[in-house]
Length: 283
Image (cartoon, rainbow, N blue to C red; front, side):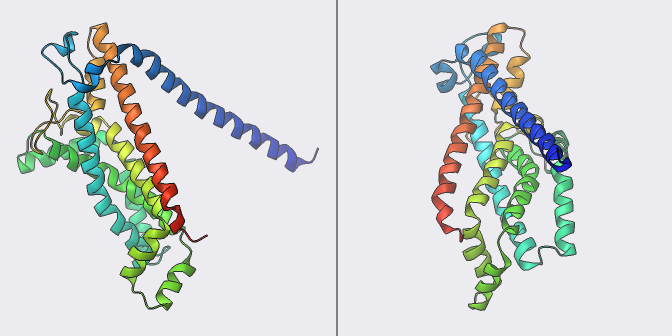
């Protein structure tokens, strides 16, 4: 048998094995969450806040953590989007895609992406001390925004880099300036990819615990102000699993089930929006 066919078959086996491992891991995670979470699920988990003695097995739910997670993830995603989109456009439209400045910016973003979230939490805690802020929804939003900005920016950057130079040059030839080209041509051409980048950042924001542990605080009440502590589902899961009571531990898996469903819903909405706006792409 020809050597190149042997090499191709070997890599084909590796690809199949890798795919099986990834799908199996996903299946086992979902199976664990569903099997252990569904028995503890009830309407109170979703519609009620923790009552006195909740972490001792008493009544209540995680409505505070659900709303807190959505507020924190949404706020930080909006802040990150406001910063990430202009940076991505600057790298690819206002400078050459392969310029030294663009490469340096990408390098810094990659370094920031690789920093553990607990470091962002420590940095956010330092900012809180400097500005004399207490653990609050605002402090959590600021910290998580710093965490997901490099993720969203690099994702958007890779999407915008795929826009053919001929489209940008055609826009210039028709009299459009850089601003018009960036926000009327490039963003429409990459809209599905930009939505995916936002989803990736939102998923990281809503699922992170380390960065908000010292910044967002934790409260059994729904945050009605940016300056109030906000519970999140990841922290609720962490505290519930640390309880010595089996009933509370089972609720942790129910909380994980709720978090999984939220991410699934956001993913479906994002995919539908991406398909809807796919018509703007020039193929």
